Image (tube, rainbow, N blue to C red; front, side, top):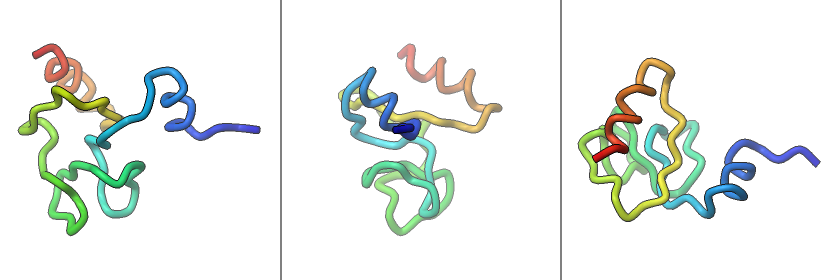
Length: 74
């Protein structure tokens, strides 16, 4: 049986609490941040949010990977 990416990562890191880079068409968790307006997102612009206290699922566009790593170092 082939597991999808989030299932494999969950096995390693535990249950994720928020999907930081998503939209109405691709979110992996019921709680997510979106770059643009989304009727289901809990917040916009993941980088303006405090990521502490969450097990963050992050699958950003490649051009944002450095920004994600910097934000995670707070």
